[in-house]
Image 1 (cartoon, helix red, strand yellow):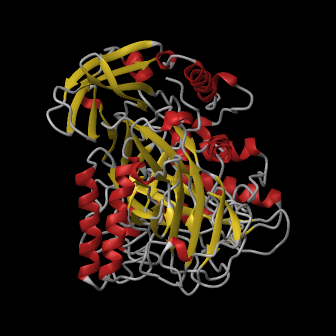
Image 2 (image 1 turned 45 degrees about the vertical axis):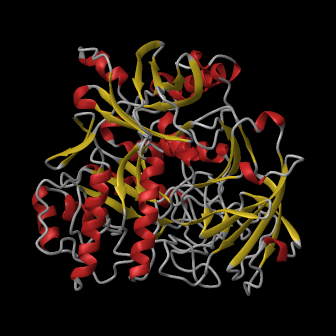
Length: 618
């Protein structure tokens, strides 16, 4: 099976797809005059998947436009009409309706999650159809999950330019009538098993079976066949336990050794292959042990960076090369993890985190008002987020709320506290294999990790607050700002992570913009970063940290990198400070320890897979 290497859905790949990104017809509809495609007057073009507010869209209109229309003619080849014909949308902000051939074929609400429409019955006799999308996104609506998108005319404080309409890839896929619709992997390291959940779509065929082949390190780990008794199948696949610790560790996924397991999943009717997909998974576990974060049964220190996921020309949209480079730069700066902040990132970014080895905290974009509708919207979309990304081994924590955004009355309103608890427990129910941070930053009522936000710029203050477990206990009892614990929530057994700190501003171009503290030049910037990180590394009360932030983002000039991803100081010294005294090897001088070496080997395997038989991908 030959699969292009930039498939938009990395863990459920078939070769039978093509991108619909590129030039589409476009129109704004500020007064919602048009309700049907036939009414629309398209007056310009747009480059999908860039939002119309972005430069790269070709529209670059940052005004208030609540409704946008898209259209393109789709011509389907004979080989693409062999079964069901689906159009996948990676993300449309905020709600969407889709027509094909003049027929309404689907609609979706939620600006950060994918959806699919079936256009099989909408093709004309000449195998063409018009695909039309209406996207609605109220720029002033604070009760819908919007993350960092500003509701004012110009970006202010910590909020950035809005994103309307299509902002992730659109692609066409042709499938058998009966096919594998969803796939989910769950590692169970304590038993050396991989959980596999499958769901079928289309007419059921009596006697259907599924064959699962797993490979890693050039050897076969499993070749199992199971029988479907309905549309759903759930199995645990035993992986041969190497027994010896060194051999065990060599098969486990971690940032230092991101070992992935390649999977080929075939749907069989007797000996006939009805459908086949390529996927991947990994063996790893996440947990806590007292005051420590635990990865694969061992104490591990998350050294993370806050990642906003914006680009100057594309806003929330980036190319695959840009997504990969951000992961590479994060690793080259010495970090082993990233907290993707107020954004559900493109699955290709998660793919590169899987491949290159980067821990991820996945965070739900917040609404800013608490209303019944806001509760329904966030909950529904959060479930779609978990469903989309649960198979990615890089994700180690789910974060449904940040800094009480959307639940502003947590200290005084028990309904708000019940909501946070409900989302925490619902998330734990849907995924018991990962950690959940109920409300990162402060005002904890339900969490597995105590996320604390502290922008003190004096290293001595951080040492005073978190240098010992006793100091941490004093801060929890008598916080320096917002309350950290509510309703007598116990911090016992909850590791503390300094999940936002730093925020030192230094601009290479000018002095505009802001940060939580300002450095006058590159030398002062580097010195303060080294002092802050040295202090945090010595804090026994902390199990890990997340520095603010990876890149400058519009008016925020507190990145380690500029908006164009240029380091603001010597990269090797920044990385050494990030890693700390126990891990101060220089990745640029020791290729044997270079954390990006695995990526090159993976690319070689991808090249083999795309040039011939998929089984060569080990």
